[in-house]
Image (cartoon, rainbow, N blue to C red; front, side, top):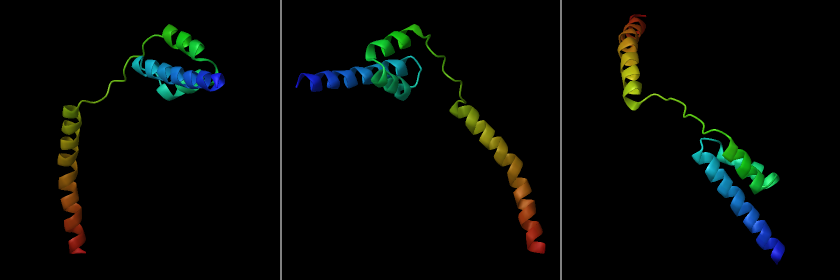
Length: 89
Protein backbone atom coordinates (compact mmCIF):
# COMPACT_ATOMS: atom_id res chain seq x y z
CA UNK A 1 0.00 0.00 0.00
CA UNK A 2 2.74 2.45 0.93
CA UNK A 3 4.72 1.57 -2.17
CA UNK A 4 1.84 2.47 -4.46
CA UNK A 5 1.51 5.90 -2.80
CA UNK A 6 5.23 6.49 -3.21
CA UNK A 7 5.06 5.49 -6.85
CA UNK A 8 2.06 7.76 -7.44
CA UNK A 9 3.85 10.72 -5.84
CA UNK A 10 6.96 9.92 -7.92
CA UNK A 11 4.95 10.23 -11.15
CA UNK A 12 3.02 13.30 -9.96
CA UNK A 13 6.22 15.12 -9.07
CA UNK A 14 7.85 14.03 -12.33
CA UNK A 15 4.95 15.54 -14.29
CA UNK A 16 5.29 18.69 -12.18
CA UNK A 17 8.95 18.91 -13.18
CA UNK A 18 7.83 18.62 -16.81
CA UNK A 19 5.46 21.56 -16.36
CA UNK A 20 8.21 23.57 -14.70
CA UNK A 21 10.57 22.75 -17.56
CA UNK A 22 7.92 23.83 -20.08
CA UNK A 23 7.60 27.16 -18.27
CA UNK A 24 11.36 27.54 -18.59
CA UNK A 25 11.18 26.96 -22.36
CA UNK A 26 12.37 23.33 -22.27
CA UNK A 27 10.71 20.14 -23.47
CA UNK A 28 8.15 18.95 -20.93
CA UNK A 29 8.16 15.39 -22.25
CA UNK A 30 11.93 15.01 -22.07
CA UNK A 31 12.18 16.38 -18.54
CA UNK A 32 9.22 14.33 -17.34
CA UNK A 33 10.86 11.17 -18.67
CA UNK A 34 14.19 12.21 -17.14
CA UNK A 35 12.48 12.74 -13.78
CA UNK A 36 10.67 9.40 -13.98
CA UNK A 37 13.86 7.51 -14.81
CA UNK A 38 16.29 9.28 -12.49
CA UNK A 39 14.52 11.19 -9.75
CA UNK A 40 12.12 14.12 -9.54
CA UNK A 41 14.52 15.81 -7.12
CA UNK A 42 17.41 15.48 -9.57
CA UNK A 43 15.18 16.66 -12.42
CA UNK A 44 14.13 19.72 -10.43
CA UNK A 45 17.74 20.50 -9.56
CA UNK A 46 18.94 20.27 -13.16
CA UNK A 47 16.02 22.22 -14.66
CA UNK A 48 16.37 24.93 -12.03
CA UNK A 49 20.09 25.32 -12.80
CA UNK A 50 19.49 25.73 -16.54
CA UNK A 51 18.89 29.21 -17.91
CA UNK A 52 15.51 30.10 -19.27
CA UNK A 53 15.51 29.29 -22.96
CA UNK A 54 14.89 32.25 -25.28
CA UNK A 55 11.83 31.81 -27.49
CA UNK A 56 12.47 31.10 -31.13
CA UNK A 57 11.45 34.14 -33.16
CA UNK A 58 8.64 33.33 -35.52
CA UNK A 59 6.90 35.22 -38.21
CA UNK A 60 4.03 37.40 -37.10
CA UNK A 61 0.69 36.78 -38.82
CA UNK A 62 1.06 40.09 -40.64
CA UNK A 63 4.46 39.12 -42.06
CA UNK A 64 3.11 35.73 -43.11
CA UNK A 65 0.21 37.41 -44.90
CA UNK A 66 2.53 39.87 -46.67
CA UNK A 67 4.77 37.04 -47.85
CA UNK A 68 1.77 35.04 -49.02
CA UNK A 69 0.33 38.05 -50.85
CA UNK A 70 3.68 38.70 -52.55
CA UNK A 71 3.89 35.05 -53.58
CA UNK A 72 0.38 35.13 -55.06
CA UNK A 73 1.20 38.33 -57.00
CA UNK A 74 4.30 36.62 -58.37
CA UNK A 75 2.72 33.28 -59.25
CA UNK A 76 -0.70 34.24 -60.61
CA UNK A 77 0.44 35.97 -63.82
CA UNK A 78 2.72 33.05 -64.59
CA UNK A 79 -0.05 30.54 -63.90
CA UNK A 80 -2.39 32.35 -66.25
CA UNK A 81 0.19 32.32 -69.02
CA UNK A 82 0.77 28.61 -68.56
CA UNK A 83 -2.93 27.81 -68.68
CA UNK A 84 -3.42 29.88 -71.85
CA UNK A 85 -0.42 28.21 -73.47
CA UNK A 86 -1.95 24.80 -72.76
CA UNK A 87 -5.22 25.81 -74.39
CA UNK A 88 -3.42 26.66 -77.61
CA UNK A 89 -1.83 23.23 -77.86
